[in-house]
Length: 329
Image: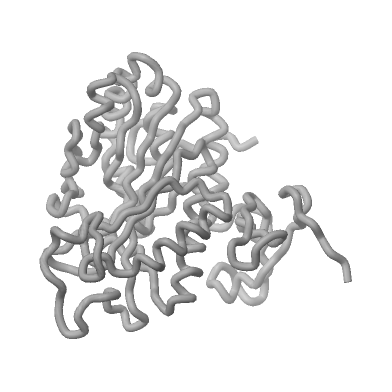
């Protein structure tokens, strides 16, 4: 027996898996590469075990179609001097294994929305033990988790990841999602990232993304925030396509202009306006510097796609409906 004590990514080998079992390759050419990209402490098996996030490469060592980290890393390297910071607010809904919201009456609905947001009490906060277990597991793992709260719809919750710089935002959010699924498994509960899990007069689930750069955080930064918002407004449809895995189809169920959302077909911005595409926090309007919140990303977004899109538009100044192809050499 040989014990391997892993101290850094450099201690980890490349590995491979059967891509045909995950619908990522053909059985006749099934091996795909796993390239270690980020490492965290394992809150389930405890030290010295690790959780390792990997990039997936195809047989020709090109990124798999699902590997959006590779492109995001390239874009982030181009704007390192601006030190882009991100904070993402991950909303999710707790469901029973039958798909029914956890804690809801088996044959009906709970009372109307109102008392559940940041609520307390067994009749308002459903599943807090799961939320607390997830929070502690993330802290142990070294995830940059910075808060949690009960959300507007009963059995819906949110946690915040960040601030994280450049590529680490996606790394930390993906691992936090894995940990959430793993914790829920122990409770016999499912965590759903569906942007509108319950149709009707109920809030959907988003992943509001807070963004700033060095220029925005310095004195007079509001000027750069306003310039970025102007650029975002000219590229609204590009961002809508980047903000959910189905190119906007999932988000169309959520971004209706109701339930604290903007309309998916319109771009808007405002100070302290939670019905806008972009919200400038009131404190930022007063201080004339800081960050802005993009409220359009869906709960099931890929954080690499979201952060890359923000950098492309706000920092690289891309225009038009498609991302620019850069020389990868």
